[in-house]
Length: 139
Image (tube, rainbow, N blue to C red; front, top):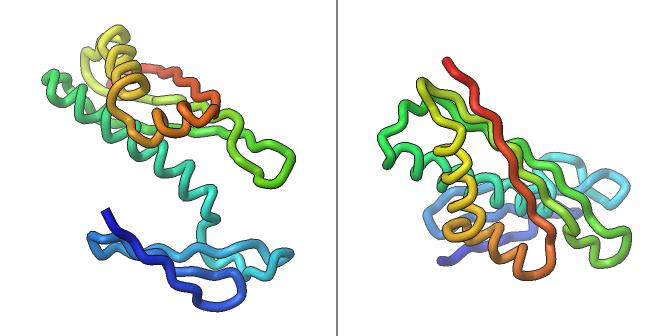
């Protein structure tokens, strides 16, 4: 995997993935930014949510569940020091579909957390407290 991050000006950067997708990262005005893009730590949090959501959806689809939607709401806390690393991340999955069994969704969330999601497992191994829960919505 490869990526490139190029400085634009102030505290704005453009990140480009090896697959050719780009994203703007910028800081708040009080740190010299213009608030034109996502913060790098927000991107890291989104990466955890995307990685976990990918797993949950894939596991449920492979199990031939009638999945309609999956939203991961993430909340995180950072330490009040430099570096301001994450101390806690919580993922709340809202999974919707037809005839979804809560035990099946729970299993998918657990497999992502314990076996498949490289991002959350890596951060967990680095000392970040990562928790998960879910709700199932019948449609």
